[in-house]
Image 1 (cartoon, chains in turn yellow, cyan):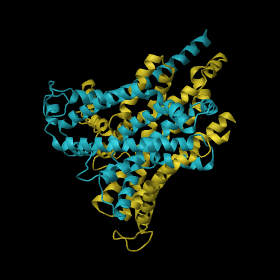
Image 2 (cartoon, one colour):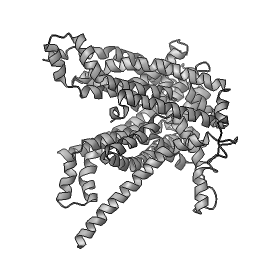
Image 3 (cartoon, rainbow over the protein chains, first blue to last red):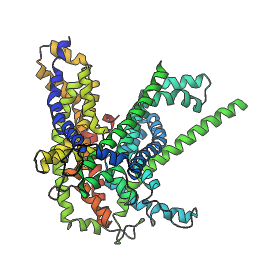
Image 4 (cartoon, one colour):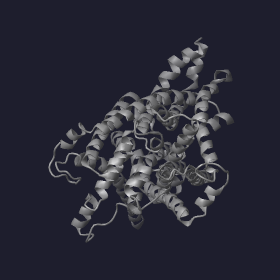
Length: 281
Length: 271
């Protein structure tokens, strides 16, 4: 019987070789370059890491980026979770229409989507015009080039990445569970808090990981909406790599950034998994 | 009676909150696309919404934008090459890891998926240094290789999902009827997972066409790609041609998506 799948793993070998050569090896180069003390790459030292981690300003950029990702991910969750829930329970026709509305922005260029928000958020933008017309504000609110603006746009741009895994998860939850909960006298909120929310945690974790990873490295959105005053790690790294031509420093930034993002991703996954054990165990 | 009213309030408030938030989500998802399309039709020289008068003048202006067209051509070329390579590599990778539960195949799975989670900008920079230290000059080929690394995981993911739905009994009956493994693959496996591969390829194409973090480091003046050129236009002088180009891209995306839906049932493959 197992003879059928015997040797199938060999099919993955060329792919593994490709990844070793063009993905793992460059990351190795990245690490090695980060160990050089100066841009001319003469002596080995941990100087670049000390330079990045020992500087208040640099640490501030790293913290801002990681926090930006958390904020945008939370907004995504707040909007994406109910939407996925509605889509999962909608009638087939409505369902495919809504899925279309989710996938179209996912496939539309990020530059295009970010550009749309410049039209919306600008001083003469739609949002400000509406706010002024309604009388909610007396003068245009500054949204472009602010952190709030970046969070709003990131949340919109990455929203599909949150909705799709949640949709998969909701599809797997047995509808009888909610009915049983209702039959036993629990209200909607209680059923949601005790049954649906815990069961959907794996999907929440999957969505949050995708959205978070995409938000912190979203170069286009961060630079176009954040402007030159708000600097996040991707732009800072890019400036050091190409503008200042300081490869070792840029490499050290990239390494620290990767591990910081990886740490948050593992954290999200751990939370998702521990709760799952709680539910099933 | 009081109990009844409490329950209704509970159900009503739940419906209201869920309904309001998801309505907001739909508006937020759809509005930017509509706004860009309308803005691009403006007759005036400035970006304004609602537009002052409708015209196609900015779309006509695209005809004279040589650099923009060259960038679009480069993007299309690299995306086609990267998609073809990712589709083959991704399918092989998925076939290799999907039906095995060994530690090795799980490690490979993690390896193939990691470009999706690691900051792509870091990888782009790493690839630039690796090519440069190895003495390889940047060209459209190095750019395509970079894109293949970030696009292959997408194909692996959809193909693994398609393989998981494949009933192993089909393969066994094909084998017991005397079919060779190659024949079984061609006549049974491939037709059944074809839509998964196609959906992955469509997504990979769009991901390559829109890639910025890798292209930022691996493309140069000769291989400038569309998203980076657009990004520069928007950052420097924000002219209305950017809106027209965006309009073209939206229509292009819509067409590709409808095609993908027809051929691969894209929306079903994504869930």
